[in-house]
Image (cartoon, rainbow, N blue to C red; front, side, top):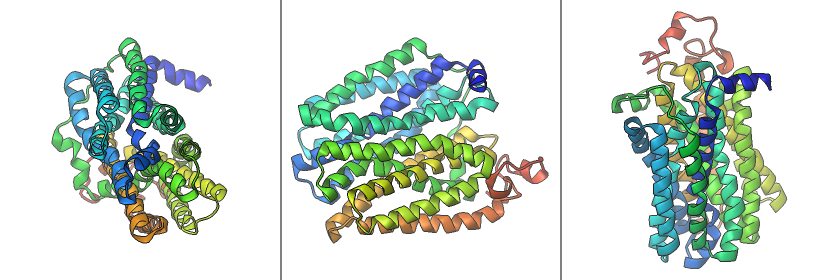
Length: 418
């Protein structure tokens, strides 16, 4: 506790809390259509493929919007960018409440929900901006814990939709967004650390082999987390014929596990090595997806999803333990781009699952497809780590110590690994 107090004293806790609240509520709104998937599907008699596309659209839109919001934050400041985003989200929720009456309008609403998904980079940068380098990791972890907004969405949206109609949930969400908006205006302060990055700097890791290695891993871990979070209410409802509200509660159990384990993933990555943790994570993900193809009972399925979400959440934390080791001079830029590509990957899973159900009558082939993808990435990780260890990271992905010329070369665009 004393250590935590020391960390808090080194920065500005009110801004960190405002950033967490901002990200948490934005994340909840981002996955709103996924949480209400069974209601929307029933209203418009959607095919499984249409449902998958409807659920994936906010994920895709949010990933694309992360970069423009980051650029805006450089010009008007991160606090002002967050305030602007939340204000626009409230207007978008008003559109959903008053004007969404057809499937096409649901798709348009999905694009608007993507605005909320753009909050990742701004929230983490704002929350950690007041803290010194030695404490930024914890600060970013606290702000990033806002992905627990998934739990809020799947816990509250289904019963509200059941009681008042699913369009009304957009109205409730718009009103509730006033809470983080007011907290941000009153308590947050713009951090003193200047963050002005050119377009070339921002996309630099896209032109490096290591950048794409990290991107592929994050597509599995975060892409799997956000994709499954959105699709599980529909999966439970259609696979086990539970009520729409029960489907949301079952999803909450898995999402809560994934959100909480993220911090532990970073903790164990520090001590055991990020590469080792990621290897275990990918093995667990492959095993979970393959076991789910056997269509086990509801209880066992829920337990397998909890295991899968725990693995994916731990993988998110472990990956970002490695990012500052590989890109110590431009961690924020590399992390932002990896986050964007990972979110784009989240749109894959709902579509794969929907197409699998529509054309084969089962979700099993969707699970197999994602398991194969995770297995390929695992094999690639085992190959990649041979180059990484001793160049910019220590054995199993721990910090390389003491500093060596090889370690120094990894600070920028090392031609060996670029």
